[in-house]
Image (cartoon, rainbow, N blue to C red; front, side, top):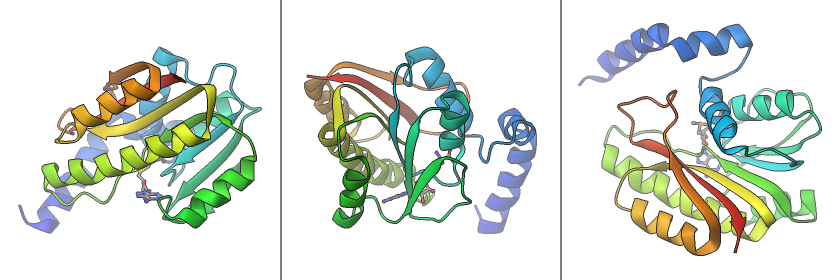
Length: 203
Ligand SMILES: C[S@@+](CC[C@H](N)C(=O)[O-])C[C@H]1O[C@@H](n2cnc3c(N)ncnc32)[C@H](O)[C@@H]1O
């Protein structure tokens, strides 16, 4: 399909999408909020938590959700792209995979944290298998970092694509966490290979 046809279809789809409309009404920056909301309502991610790292945070709807619902949270959000400030959310603009940015995150908290969430994804290429591989690599790196950063009761949530690395990621997660679930929220588009991995309690 030609590029301008794809973007035209994208605009039509956005206008029809109830989650896009709902996010505008509620003042959220992205329809992605409803994925985190569904995950939180089902798996109680933020219950009794304060310190939270949001990887791949731009434009910021996940951080907006956390700070609105859990007002005492200490949130550090990082993204390659700069995004508009969110009151009470701390921000790093940069590549999460770079060691200097991981150091910045570690120094910010100076102790183990309660939750690491990652919605990181690269710009889609149109090749769903390739997108799944690259997003899988981001998920693996986010999980390794989460294992380093989380306290024993910590929780890790990440976008994961159905693809070649899926089984390996789930198997690794089960070795490191006591509870591992895969969940596709209703608000995640049906034609997307995206799901979420929800991990609780380090072994
Ligand atoms: C689907 S969007 C996140 C949406 C966000 N959860 C929200 O609610 O607004 C994915 C984001 O991952 C970011 N990203 C991809 N690779 C990254 C990396 N290596 N480091 C930091 N952010 C990254 C992209 O820049 C993009 O903004």
